[in-house]
Image (cartoon, rainbow, N blue to C red):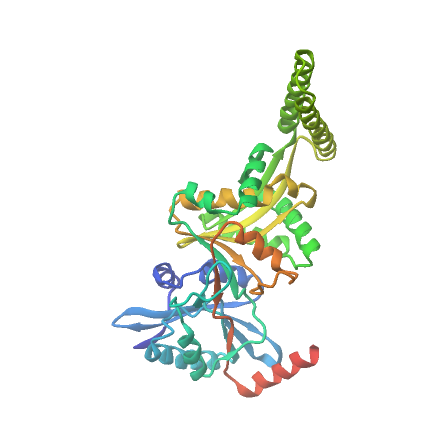
Length: 405
């Protein structure tokens, strides 16, 4: 075996074919990091001229002239092949040390234990616990904080769309149908509309006290991945003018029905049910008219950023205007992207991050519950691990971080 610096194209080819492939290891993400001052390297292990393990490595100079090294969602390796893993890590340490790196962080796209929709471990299911002990034996320690998510929620697309929809929670299905009735159209955002995408994402982030990315991040992501078909920036529009016209037509029909029933001498209880329907229509017309006056004929109410790479469509970011959420848009955007994934040959839809806390009283439970409504399963990733390269600096930075807390 040999440890080598890889060319970008040969690394990309290896990534595209690897079982642990993920968008965070794409060279485009490396270019995105470069714009924030990171350096990018592609390194790997070859055996008989074939790459058997590799990773994109990022580095950034910190204090004292030493660098932090990070393999986002790497390493791309067999974590149960101890010989290759040991060889790779040993040479990574030497490579990083030569470049004055004091730490290596990794957070592989690797499942620890198979779990069901409720987060329970599946008896007899996949168990990669051995990978953790292998990493520990090589000197890796579990990080106290993870940069990437450690828990996610996914849906396999191995059935017909009708079956997938049928298996969803009844409330989720009703929300999807409601959105269709409310004239919601899901479309791709233009580059010039990224400001609008960010504005909608900001609204949700402010509501939930999350941090959002700056506009430059979305613009760069669009240029690097969107133009290559590896990302979609989505907007969901409500056509208030069309909805108002339809509601007005329904109102007039309801009025005529009531008049006819009264003239025909229909039972009062039947007439009363139509009067209630009329009141509901009047209330809806009032609401939609008010929104139309504020926002115009068409308004973008939901936004999302989706990664389309490998075998999956991944829901990276999303947000909604709060005053429109009852129109069914959050569920409808997901459904439209699930349909897109299925119709375009993807085998999996990844709703991405959840907290991993399944207590209904937990503040973050709602995010998991929303995703659970579509059916699927919980995924527990291996998490983030760090390897000390320069022990003195490694300890020094630990002390500095502890003092800052």
